[in-house]
Amino acid sequence: MIEGPANIVTLWAASTRQALGLASAEHLCAQELAQADRFGQPDDRDRFKAARALLRHALNETSDAEISPGSWRYAEGPNGKLVMAPGLPRLEFNLSHAGNCVAVGVSQTRPVGVDVEMATRDERLEIVTDVLSDRETEYLFQMPEDRRWDTFLQLWTLKEACAKALGLGVMQDFSELEVELDPVRIFAPDDLLKPGEIFDIETFVTVPDQTPARVSVASIRNAGEATEFSHRPFSKTFGRHPR
Image (cartoon, rainbow, N blue to C red):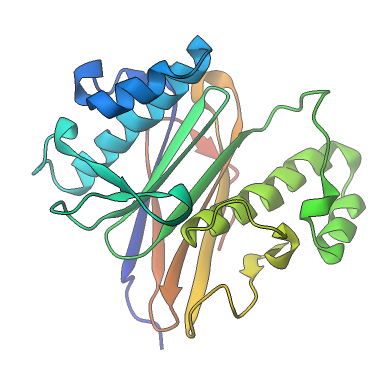
């Protein structure tokens, strides 16, 4: 029997402009500023700074402001995933950015993965069926043509979020993570999760600065737990899917 939520995942989603306004540059550490400077394009630098500023803001709120935004430090975990540096609260977190949208997920107890993609269709972008299972591909192409792109983004971002929650880098075969959208759930091979572990996932659309983006979040819990997803109101959200 599952009782109250043992795993609370809070998600912040904002535009690059909104996130840059959350914290001044001095809140970012010297290493982060140096990393930002290595990006050749100003938009890429801004996205990186915005995501790190939003992350510090989210961690600060999660810790009830006991630690100032500029005091957070990170280490590199397996496959390059950021983890909390030793000596700081053991919060689980993940961040993602694309286009003009940045998103951060934080949990006090369980691993989290977040992925964001812009929902507007670029004529240069194609649906990549190699990352889909046969069943997902069949489901996708049963959709009306005007719904296929967003359906593909739901499938893709949920797979990415789950892979990031697992701490994986680039998976060799994303089709191993099979998504079902009605209702939203995911099936993973036994060797990806520990015995008794389950994915909880959610996907929704956010509209930072009037530009829609598809955001998906995943967390891993034990079978006897429950996960509660909550959203902080940096931008209007709509079209949330039930778990």
